[in-house]
Image (cartoon, rainbow, N blue to C red; front, top):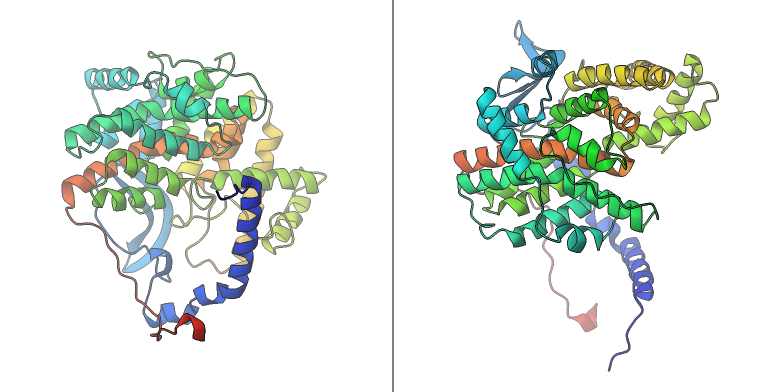
Amino acid sequence: MNERIPFEDVIVRNDEYSARQLDAHQESFEIEADRYFEYNVQRGLRDVNGNGVLVGLTNISTVTSKKIIDGKTVPVDGELSYRGYNVKDLINGVYGSSHFGFEEVAYLLLFNELPDKEELEEFKAMISMNRTLPTNFVRDIILKAPSRDIMNSMTRSVLTLASYDTKAADTSLENVLEQSIKLIAQFPMLAVYAYHAYNHYELRDSLYIHRPDRSASMAENILRMLRPDSSFTDLEARALDAALILHMEHGGGNNSTFTTRVVTSSGADTYSVIASALSSLKGPKHGGANIKVMEMMKDIHEHVSETKDDEAVEDYLRKILHKEAFDRSGLIYGVGHAVYSLSDPRAILLEDFARKLAAAKGLTDEYNLYQTVASKGLDLIRKERRIYKGVCVNVDFYSGFLYSMLNIPVELYTPIFAMARVVGWCAHRMEQLINEDKIMRPAYQSVCEKREYVPIDQR
């Protein structure tokens, strides 16, 4: 009988083997940058001017960062619209009538129309009814496999939920819509309960599992389930509600939504599609960006003795930009966006809620530091970097700060994003099913040279 190798020894041997092989063969993976120009390959599906490669059509949202004026392409203040409605008007409309807006805007994205009172109440009732998980799911699936990586936990849970769905593979629109509503309702439970499992078993804190309140909004329920005493202020819930609306959708070209459409095009089931989108979103270049902002701000506090001194903050930001400080990446996180040039409309709207929340919590000095970093960071980048389209503060710059003021643990920052964006994913999945019947299969040009096989004893 073969001797069992201890798991710890397997890890060590794997590390040693991988390091040795990469040291010997890494160069063979590299492709010269000139080859991309030779074949006119748009790396990252974006051309040299930053324009995305057009791969489809959508009626779900519009992201605007430039307009053609007098025959010339001119950068403009960013605009974001859902189904033709400016997101600024949606936010102002919701809070002008003093109700929570997540469910109303989710209805708009899924059905292409703003609901009337009766339609909204019926939709809210459907979301509320589906705020439940299969019997013992929390105990057997979530609590028994705690992980600091809540996104991985959510992905595992989503795939496991397929086992409880007798029509998991049914891709009819009626069934996909039913599955979508269930997942939208369940996402906060999957994320918050996964965090509580990690917090209890790994951090040795008390375990809290609060059931959702079926009469409460999505934002209220997230705070209710997360906090030990389930209490929160109206401003806190409305700030989170606004963040959820602003993160709900952002065009078909963002990485996780594009993933949704690609996997949908293969004929895959809803659970596999949404699990794929979650995996895409968790990357630090996508949904994890606000965590880097928080880490950078913490680093500034540690290295700038007087954060009210604008010149001292600017000097340190210059070091960050010159790869002399923080993570040596040369990036001022939260400043700059792949699409927006002069402004990110989501950042402007979220900044207003961050300001109000900071004032309510006695954190105005911290808010002012964020404003200083934004202002000085923009100035430095404009002076020292060649930015073809302009540069602005993006939504991630303020979202992490807002979440921190809501006492949301950093492990839940990206899952909060997912709780919102799942609505957009589901809308794009249905649009893909309705309008496209071909599998997405882009081309890759092979640059591999032909070689002859050599017998093993001659190598």
